[in-house]
Length: 225
Length: 291
Image (cartoon, rainbow over all chains, first blue to last red; front, side, top):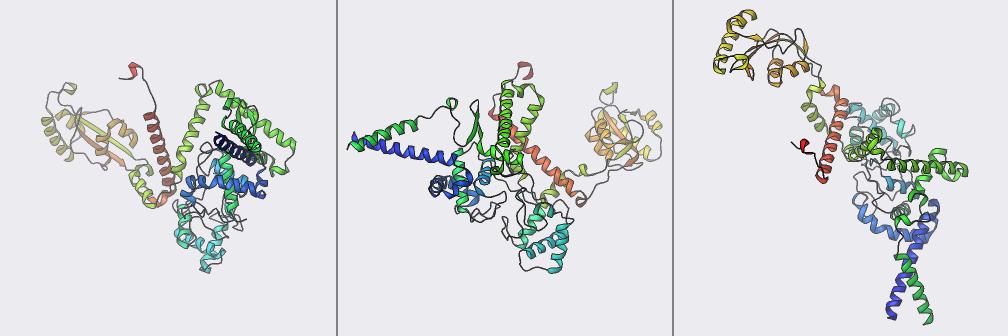
């Protein structure tokens, strides 16, 4: 009987501790969470199995992405802004998920498929992207590509004149040499020709707010800052 | 021992408190992670922060208490109005609300469709299957002569006899006989399906029907069709003037094909979704609608 009471008591203490930590996780200002190591440890422990079950299929068990457009979550690049708050909102409402609060202001247009740029023009743009990332390129084509970037292609409109991207649009930094859909010339050509329309589902109402907050803290802690 | 029992007792109390969750509608305090409860409906803290930042145009930490209070008041007002709309059953009464709900579901259903980029081959296949959509509107100035058979319009001859007469009439027309001669000699009449003058193809198709239209569309200026048996008799189609539709090449209309392709995909996604919903739904029809 005493053993049962002790077991129940221990279980109760555990639950109370967990409830207290969950409450802390939800009440601590999001930008203050990363500095609280015990809270990050608690959140990460809660999040790991959730991530493996729900997120790893696209982002990989190691969070490094799987080359299918789901980004590497361990680097320092965030299309829609890093930090617990922005990561949580992306998990809550997704990207182009159809939810009105999702990140879906723009998408990468299919310039080739729609006939807006020719194959040669796209080739020139690819050479310019290679040049921006200090990789071997055809200088003449890269020059033509830069003219297209700042002119007819209107790439600057989303990716900015200096090609460093814009998190308001989820437009990636084209100078960081980090590519969700591959950074070789062929993959870059495809990205411009066919466009890109990455989709992430909304997890609100599929996971609890506690679980989503834990995931946001875990992912944030896993990224290089 | 006493300490252990005290700890166990405290644990039991905590466990009991933890195990008994308050029902959703028994919330008396705003749960962690929420900024407000409006008739038990939570407003997320993260939504509040995002709205405040968007409204103020600066990071949340830099916003003033007054700005935050205003945003929160607006969010509570919105939630109250949404709840009121549901209480008033606006989805049943207001067509705009119904449209918005329809659109919301369509956006969710379309999301994965829009994420799947077509290949060039997909676009070309779509273009080839819908070439008429990328062509100018053709016109035709056509006379549709019909020889009624098989009791239609009191005609007493058989289809076989009608076809034989039509072949003879066709021969005479092609040899230079006038339409009036053929009408008088064989009993052909103008079917009245085609108005005089140039008619757009879509109108011709409506009036002639698909089969006669297909035969007519293939005729050039001055040509006469082979006899065509339709339900009202044997027809001879005499084309005075044909302006065939001009088909556009794929490269010229790529952008339109791309947009149309996605429209078609969305329509299919909507149809699939409705089919799924219909299968899962209990739909009962009044007896007179069931026939």
